[in-house]
Length: 458
Image 1 (cartoon, helix red, strand yellow):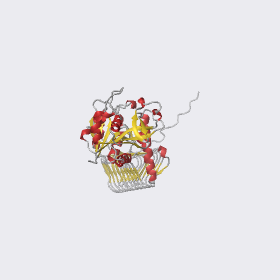
Image 2 (image 1 turned 30 degrees about the vertical axis):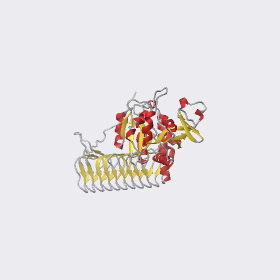
Image 3 (image 1 turned 90 degrees about the horizontal axis):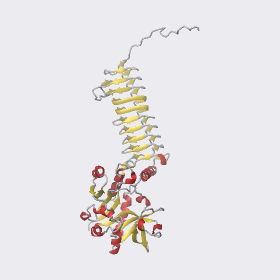
Image 4 (image 1 turned 90 degrees about the vertical axis):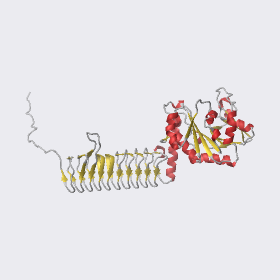
């Protein structure tokens, strides 16, 4: 018999309580759609095939999940959870099947591996994952007899005594494909909602004397997202898990409660994260770097011994080792700061190669520019890179150039090594190496221009 594992993920619900035009499973949890977290957990747990049952917002959901090598199966006329599973064409599945909810973003690959392992060790035909909750609410109750699973009773059908049971159904199942093929078609819709419930599969399997087990798990796996509050809670939990992992790996986190690092980010040991910093995407931070408060870093690479000072914003950039940035600097896509360089407060770099040991201390904009090594860029310097023809041109500045304050470079223009640009200059032509360039209006002084008017007697 095949030992392959197939995951069926149910993601067809409307999510009306989210009160959002976005399909529920596409809402972000710590930067990624919640359905993506479930898909990746299933794949990392060894699922060779992932079948996603879609419904509401199908076209949008497909755009997100199909690049993840997931096959979508539409539930055309939703009639309950058993109907949803049937929509995944179970007749074409062999081996074992894990059935997951698309709105349970806190489930991890290790959880699914444990469910499948216990399912196989117990030689089960069908297993349901359960958790204990202090407030079970509307979850179906797990009724046991002498420790063994006897039934799952829906809350609306439960007696007052049954409602006291705290062990509940998570909606997660592990089952042999043959059991699905044989017993799914036998499920009836003899209920007030006229829907086909997957929980009835348990009753049918028990009646047929199949080996059915309830596998206890952590309450975390049962956290479904149905409201914006539950979404926020899930995001908080994912951030918490990441911060714990970083601290275990030697990262200094000043206040774990107010530090936000997405799961895809890497931070080296010895680095320090201050409160209210936000690291997202494919960001990598090296060792012994300091990220001060209110810093935002997205999809960027930060080297070792770097200081990103308060209020700075980095997006799709590279900052090599021993650099310092900010406070209140903005590094935009395409920028690379070479080793031991510095940009200070209110400096903006866009698509700039900023050379080793170069400095731009404050109030400067450099866009589409190549800046050499050991360049000093004075306060108020800008590159005028966007021309009237709506094209962008580059400014190239050589090594060891001194740029005086309040200089404008009208691109395209080049400045040779060791040149000096006088303060207040507007540079429209290339400057040779070791030259002095001064381009400013001639100063005119008119003495006695502002004589005081004679006092008026009243």
